[in-house]
Image 1 (cartoon, rainbow, N blue to C red):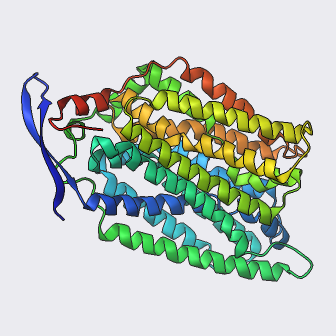
Image 2 (image 1 turned 90 degrees about the vertical axis):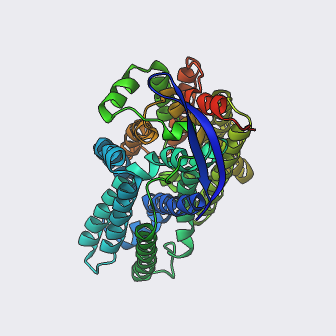
Image 3 (image 1 turned 135 degrees about the vertical axis):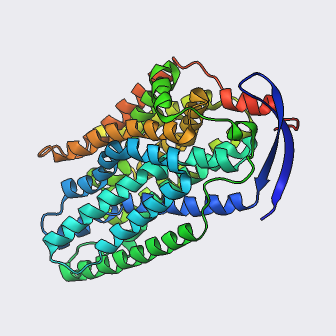
Length: 447
């Protein structure tokens, strides 16, 4: 495909001399973004496969309960922490194509394994294997968006392009709540055999989707275009070990990492269990979760686009969104305490609002981190940044293994984490090293 825009820009070499760089934007960048967004969306849906139908699984499969469902989701944080370093190394040395095809293959194999007819115990083991493979693929799905955006998109589209796969991952989580429309909830007229039949149908469809995505990825998914879209896209990045050292010495980047880790809690994986304490059961909780995550996706895209249009305000935007999430989760706490009489409209508003502003800040966190860390590779920065919420997420999900802990504590955890995440942000010195170079050197104009 031909480029849609060509510019001649001035770059500075390592000796201080300026030279011309021809930058191009290609129409194919939208295809690359679409395929990758579909992969990240599917990975998000697979990560949250079991939470929305937890009650059904508990009724149809022996041994399934909240701890089993939490463990299925917990494979995401666990595998991320184990494989983030080697997968980021793979992406940094072999390129995006090899990394993405590898992850698409893992998801396809994992979803296929669950379709093998087997007794309940073996089926459960195969589900764990699938969750392991899906979680491992999440290292690239979550780390690659800013790298993909930097390699294919011009500066005025970069944050939006970063946000699209992140938002797609969240939308995938939302789509998982529609599984309750396929898998029947337990009831007087619904037998365990009925539920198992529904689960088999669901998993077969998901295996087919995974195979189709693998074919699309293998067919066409180059690592980067022949000409860069911006000056900094063409500029060399630090080597892998040098990147790790640079991140470890960068106080502002570490503060952003800490804030992001504290703010990102995977409670959508167990949302239906918490909502049951407020009188909202599986079917209704599924719809609420779906709407909440869709609202998060819309908020994320809006925040990212505004950041592209109004340059240099990522940090205050993140702070504003985190303060809004504190307000929403405090409202939810008041409902849990009984300080305010529980009304469904209040539960809906606080859950949807809190999740929207909380998850909606993700792309801005990523943008802020890669700007502060430049010239570190975007994928490596984001990979290690995503490792932090996987630590806090694993801790959160492991709490479900405590006997008789209940579910009311979930909202207290959310409120405390959001309050704590604001403190590191107040100490960050805002700087946009990468974008300032592109905007200063470009002979054209940016919004």
